[in-house]
Each structure stands twice: as C-alpha cells, then as structure tokens.
Length: 170
Image 1: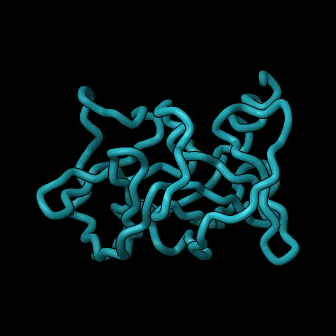
Image 2: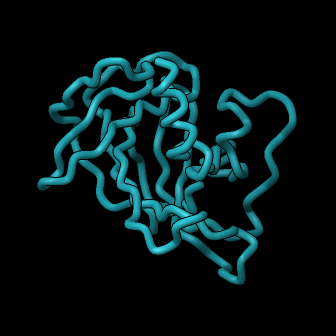
C-alpha cells in the first residue's frame, strides 16, 4: 500500500493541491507529493505491460514508470498534445517494511493548470453515482470555480501491489 496523502480531516486547515486534467476530468493531488512537472519527453516502451504503462523514462539517472492516467481510468490512451505533461510524484511505501525508499512514478496527464489552496471543509464525499473516474481512485470531490474536481487517491491509483498484479496479467 502507498501512503500518498495525509487525511484531509487532519488538523491542517488548508492544503495546497495541484489541479490537472485527464481527458475531460479535472483532478487535484496534494502538492507535497509532487516532485516536479516536466514536458513530455522520450519514453521507452515496455513489452508485456498493461496499456496504462506508457513505458519508462530516465530522470537524472532514476528510471521510473510512466503511468497514463487516462488509460488507468479506462478512458483509453491519452493523445500527447501541446499541453500534455509528466507529473513526477514521490510516495512512501507503507506496510510490512517501513523505512523503504519512497516510490517515484511519473503520471502522464493532458494538462497542468495551477496550485490551489483547498480548505479541509471543502472536500466532499465521493458520490455513489455519476462518477467518470472509477470510485476506487477517488478520495473526495472539491468544488473549484463551480466545477467539481476529483481528489485523486494515489494510494489505490499507484498501488505497487496492484500495478504488479496487472503487469503479470499482461
């Protein structure tokens, strides 16, 4: 399991979130897990991997998988365009071996917009119906400029156990 973000119910009144797009959906993730944002560059395809793994990239000597969020959510492969970006995230592994090095993964998104201040009270529960992003990848909804935005659950989206299982099936 991956610990991606502290609970929004924690005593913190406001957290900064990165707002980005995946298809027609707008997503936010805590800025404290974002290591950097890059232009889409060269990715080396990996054989026998699920369609959401676009390949691997080398970032200053560190090789990391590139996860296409559109494909991960079942929207199909993302077309790389002018606004496409790679969001490098660093998330700590939790579980049987605490103290392990954080996992670094790259997320392919259609656009990156801004960093927002989100008050904990603005995070609403996930609705039971009408979700485009599969509910297991969502930990809440945030109203940003009269549009509901998905608070992404990186623990399930980037679960190394689940990604490994899906790669073994490919």
